[in-house]
Amino acid sequence: MATLSIIGTPIGNLEDITLRALRVLSAADLILCEDTRMTKRLLDRHNLSKPTLSYHAHSKLARANEIVSMLREGKNLALVSDAGTPGISDPGSALVALVRKELAQELASGALKIEAIPGPSALTSALSIAGVPCAEFSFLGFLPHKKGRETIFKEIASSERTMVFYESPHRIAKALSSLKDHLGPQKQVTVCRELTKIFEEVISGSAGDVLAYFTSHPDKERGEFVVIVSGEPGAL
Ligand code: SAM
Image 1 (cartoon, protein in one colour):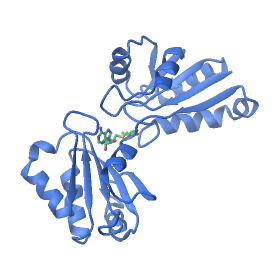
Image 2 (cartoon, helix red, strand yellow; image 1 turned 180 degrees about the vertical axis):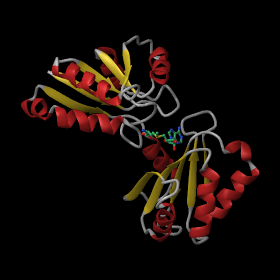
Image 3 (cartoon, protein in one colour; image 1 turned 180 degrees about the horizontal axis):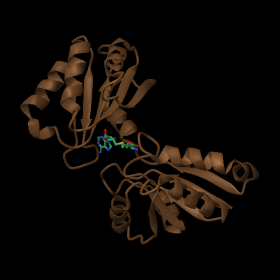
Image 4 (cartoon, helix red, strand yellow; image 1 turned 120 degrees about the vertical axis):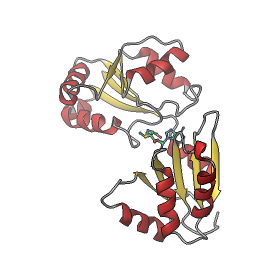
């Protein structure tokens, strides 16, 4: 039986990897990566030496056909992304969708298994420390840069549910400024920055407060960010 193992990997701290993930990585015939250099850092840290292949470099279609053929031959492949859980706002899900489509028969007959090897995600890590209501929430991934952006901010402002999105360092100030324009002062905004890394921090307050923090600390507009907007003002 061939296996495609979808493996969660660290979002910063290279120790954040499960025993099962390490075992499956070390047993795989090949590791499919977003960026082979990023994955090599993780493998080196855990003394693993394995062949790797970038699944979205060069001609995406040629690579996809190559991967499908390997699974047909009964190979055990591991799939990782640069950070966190493959498929959560990264290209992992496109490959899984393609394998599910192309190898539907093999999946149905049991000749192929696609398995989850769960691990960290910036989404769940941020929610776990923010202290906001998250029995239910909406995850928006990366916000659109232009078309639909205004509508999304209106949706965030009117939502009774906690809303979460990912943001890049180039756009964090812009996003906070839009939140300030759209949200009432009583809605709580939480920015989780550089999770699991040396400069991890959580900044919380009204959109105006959080924007003011970044405006007065421009050096903090670096790194990786998760933004959380609470639905119910002040509720836990
Ligand atoms: N698949 C990943 C996951 O499970 O979280 C997300 C991949 S997405 C391409 C990368 C975005 O996730 C970053 O731009 C940032 O918004 C967020 N992110 C990843 N690592 C993070 C970290 N250590 N701290 C805060 N946000 C992070």
